[in-house]
Length: 471
Image 1 (cartoon, rainbow, N blue to C red):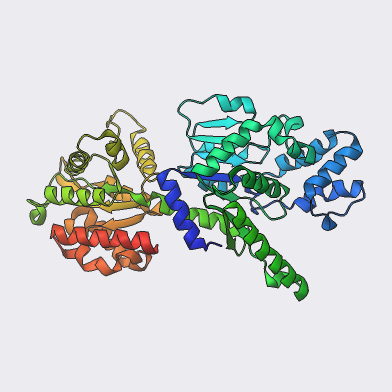
Image 2: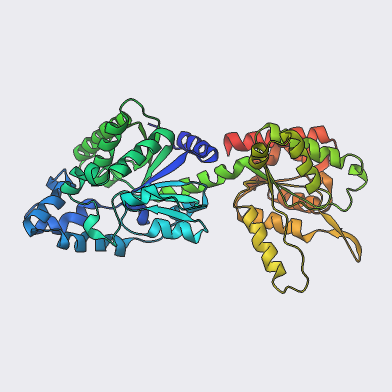
């Protein structure tokens, strides 16, 4: 069984390195985080004189219902319509859509997952039937495998025991594709509960597919809570049963991650989203001049800092601002030695749109562009911050705007106050609320006063190490 912190650390790594995947259950379409399958089937069970509280195989109940009704049209209407009408947009899906996760498998019949991915500007390749698996949507950002069908064609949806038993006959290509992803990717199972009938069948399929060739996957599950029970014997029975189920999940290579309540899921995903971006650093600043203290050392300092960040495998984002951007870019280019793949991995240039003063929407355009930077950057380093104007050298309002956007994006902020100008202004603001920036505390004096490039770089690397380890 994995702790929440261990899971977050491993899954962040999987996202950063491009082998993370999501396996979404019905609960992902509901803010509560899970679907109560017993309640969903209770009315149907009563029609055929069964009590769902006494039944262990809910898929079997659905099959019995179809048998007695001589068809599945009523089942389609009652179950699928409830899935569609009860599915609601929630923060969990939005957080997932913001992350660079490319592979999604789902047992859901609704369109919520793919619709929200599109809302976040992603081009989605949907695999709904076996024929879709032989085609590829060019320049797609995410693939959604709807392994149990889609509500637009309810006759093909996997609901009954017949559907599960005939799955490999009708959807063999989905089985093959799933096997490949289970071997090569790290899955997060989300939106499932132990009462979810899909989980049982999916797990058996995984075990048959992989046998000993398993990698570690994760599943978020709600703890058995003592305070929810009036009968202690019942509590201890369910607690023991949960432990046995958790041990059983290990047979499939799935580590259970116990949480107090499913409402925690968005908070956990928010932490993962934040940490996922922490291998990308935005260097914010502009400099028409460097000031007396930095007049001769600033370019060498910027180069040395960027080279050190490169050696620690960070990706650098630059707005290519005057006096800063060219040194950032040249340092990375020099380190990559014309290796294009390394260059793309370690450098992102976000040069701002040309300033057309005749455009009324230019300020809004630039603000949106700056906000886009922090979809990738989890850390921002601020230095200098001045420009030339008709009044001479003035503070750069754009650097300060980037600071406010970084705050709003919940990015880690590292202002080098000793470089002066807007960076000092930002440092002064941060100092007033230093408890909100605990990762900066031990390096306060260096960031505030030092003009020694080596000392500042050493302090920044300590801060970054602290962020990666503790925050």
